[in-house]
Length: 117
Image (cartoon, rainbow, N blue to C red; front, side, top):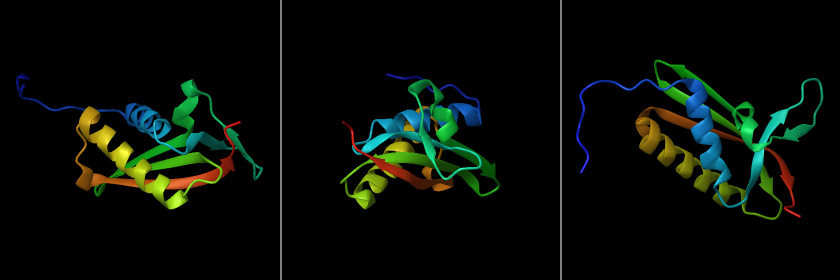
């Protein structure tokens, strides 16, 4: 049994980005997170310890917006993967960071398609 402790929980944007990035990587069809290379139209697949660069977190009075820049596996249903991705990230942020889903907006940017070979 867990005991309720009164108080508030503050979670930094970097922690939110890490949680969202790891939740995204656990989804079927997601190859990895990506970073837009400045001045070019190409993207770079990020290593596991640099996931934060593929997740942008912003806050305002309306809540929290999480932008995920992902690379998907080729030949997957992008709509299904995007829905699962949004659901997984929302669930992880609700469970771990205690963020109310009503105050959370997930935006998915599919930057590239890649085969897993």
